[in-house]
Length: 66
Image 1 (tube, helix red, strand yellow):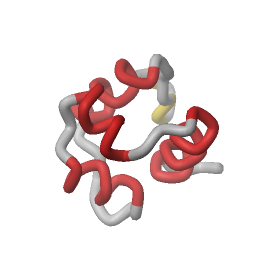
Image 2 (image 1 turned 135 degrees about the vertical axis):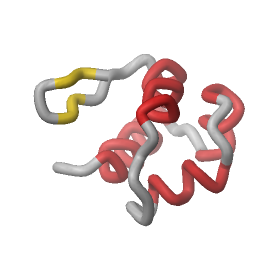
Image 3 (image 1 turned 180 degrees about the horizontal axis):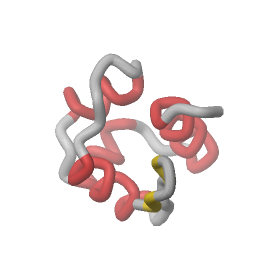
């Protein structure tokens, strides 16, 4: 799985978490999360940091881990 949307869907599914719950935990808007989930937008780094903090995970983009 090479994209953020795929990793996000997989993580949410494994944890039994909805986008709405992630929205509440991360402070990232539902619209942004849905756009990320459908891979229809570029991901803002600050939103990605909020999501990774809420899920207690990290993302690696190139040589950078968030």
